[in-house]
Amino acid sequence: MLAYLSFAVFTGIGGVTFWLPTIIRNSGVKGILNIGLLSSLPYAAGALTQILVARHSDRMLERRWHFAVPAMAASLGWMVMPWFAHSPVFSLLLLTLAALGILGAAPTFWSMPGTFLTGPARAAGIALISSIGAAASFASPSIVGWLAARTGSLAAGQYYLGAVILVSAFLVLAGFRDPRMKAARTGA
Image (cartoon, rainbow, N blue to C red; front, side):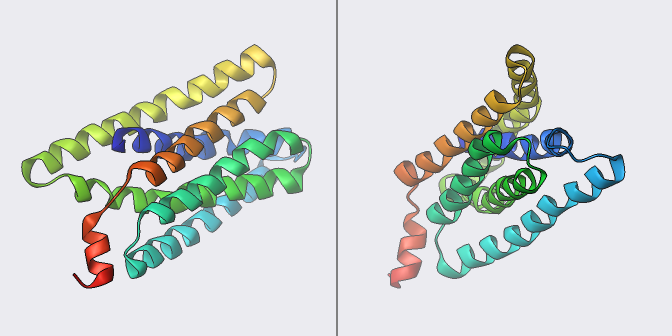
């Protein structure tokens, strides 16, 4: 499960990093400076969201929902984006939703491996999980590019990004249980 979550987080971050300027340009924004300036807005929102979600997750001693809700937001942003492909305002808003969602989920994800892995297995497990995530950084832009070349549109790739992230949210809700968090909340 953790390996897939890593794949999904890296897929989402890679999607924002790799495709954000292209999506802004395709929505009708002209000029490299304008595209560059607008491209900074989703990252600013994502950085703030990372801090807020991580702090709230630590304060509430809860991980599942603090991963799943931002991941669902990111998925929604990617999956609705094709409907507004020619609207600069809505494209930017949906890109921002995708960025704040996946960047908000990332720190909560990275707190999860320590829940299951201890001792020497922790280092090896985190290395394996990170390696699988890194593979997503390589594979996902290629998959989105291939889909765009085959269909003539980024829509199929955006649906792919949204689907990968949505599956991760459901996996966490269905399969992640942290007994240490429950014990800490109940005082046991």
